[in-house]
Image 1 (cartoon, one colour):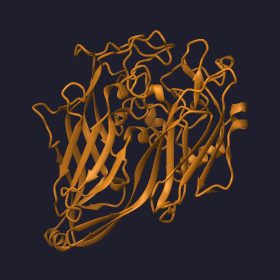
Image 2: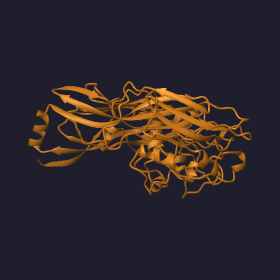
Image 3: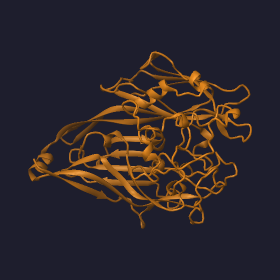
Image 4: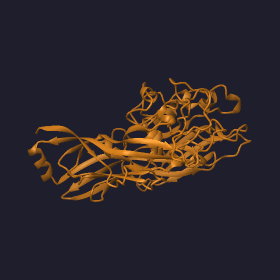
Length: 451
C-alpha cells in the first residue's frame, strides 16, 4: 500500500465574528476543534495549536515592558510564565470523537505542564527566547515581557496524541476542546521579587488567528477502502487523571482512591494557595513549601523538606523506604534520590541536556534570611536560568509493563517538613496527576474505553 504525507489544517468550530478568544473580554473561554472522520492516519505527536498571543491593559493598550530585566524588575511589568509559556492558558483539555465518546479529559492541564515541560525540555530551548514548539520565553525576552504580540505553535501533551498514530476513521473523527484559564492565572507582575510592583488590574490576554494543524498519512485508494471497511480495532495509550488537595501543616498525610487499573506514574507539584489566580504571583510556579520573610511579609523562604513516603493499601511502594531530603537541604547540595524519582515519572532517566533541574533551580529560595547572598534571586542574565525553584513530586510505578492496579486500593502520601518555630504555616495547594494506561476497543461502531 502506498501513502503520502499531508498536512491537515482546521479552524475552531465555535469561531465568532473575529477569530479571537479571551475569557474576560468576549466570553469565549472554550476553543473547539473538530477533525473530520477521514480514511487517514493522524500523527498525533505533530498536532499543534497555532495562533497569536497578546496581553493588553484594561484600556486595551499594550504594556510598556520594553526595559529588560537587569538587577531588578520594573514596577509596571506584566508577564507570563517563562517555562511553560502559552501552555499556562489551557485550564483543561478534553479529547472526544465526533459522536461524544471521551478518550481523555485532563483538568488543571496548565499545572500538569508546569511539571512535565521543565523536566522534558533542554537548557538550549529554555534560553532560546520564544521557543517555536512551546511558545516559551526567557524572562528577559520580548516573549516573556509581552509588550508585543507573538506567534505560538503549541503541542498538546496528552498521551492519546503522543501515543501511536491514530486511525481517524475508526475513532469516528476527533474533537479537541480547550478551556482557557482566567486572566489572573496566566498574567502576573513582579511583586514576588519587587514589592513595589503595581497590580495590573483589568489586564487580559487574547488568543487570535487560531488554527489546528496535524500531519496525516493518506493511503492510496485501495488503502482507504480497507480503512473504511475495517470495523474492529484496539488502541492503547497513557493519559492523566487530576487530583487536588490542600496542605495545611508541615506534617501532611493524604489518602485517596485513584481507581485506575494500569497506573504507570504519579507526578505533582506544590504552590501556595494564595498565589493561584492572583495577579501578584506566578500561578505556574512550582516551589517547595514556603514561609513568609520577616522583612517583606512575602512567601519567599523555603521550609525544609524532610521526607516523602508513597504507599499503596498501607504498603510502601514502589519504594520500600522513605525518600529523605533533610541532609541535602541543610547542606545545600543536590537532592539526588528525590530528583531521580520525579524525573523517572516523566521520562526514562536523567538526560545531560536537561538543565532545569540544577542547584540553581533547586535552591533558589533561601532557607533563611541569612542565606540570601548564597542563592540570590534578584540577579538575572540572558544566558542563565531564572533561579526559580523547580520542585516536583513524583514516582514511576511501571516503565515497561502495563502498570499497577489501584482499583479498590488507596494511595497514600506522607510529606514531612520542618517549619521554623517562630513561623506559622500557610496553606499550600497540591496538584497530583496520575498517569494510567487506557485501552479503547472498537467493535462495529461501538466504542468502549477501559481505564
